Length: 131
Image (cartoon, rainbow, N blue to C red; front, side):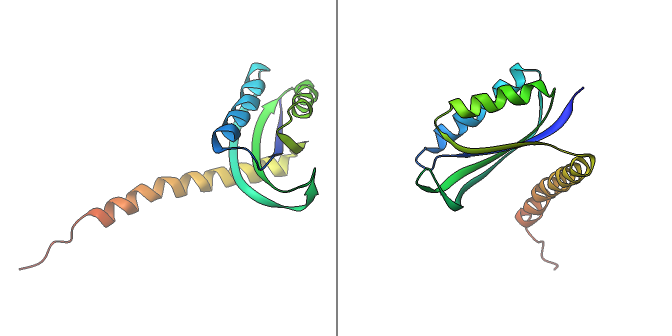
């Protein structure tokens, strides 16, 4: 049975943007190889940590929501532990309320993205003067 999961991981702050994207892509590909369906990917950027982890005070936060079999989680977390670039991670199974909230959040985000181009187009249109 496919369950909905959310995983957040923190990458070391010494990485370049290209290295961050490459690492995130690596884990998304790992999930897809294990028949998981990625539903959301967010890069939260460089954030200050609440407390130092491995002598680091900042890190690149990333979130991935996906649907997968429960057996995939153990494999994913093993991959996280093997990756030197990851300083912390957390994966949890979303309950029905979290899934509903996440779905609403995605819809609102999509609506906002759909409205932005319309606003930009209206600003570009030149006003016509009445004679």
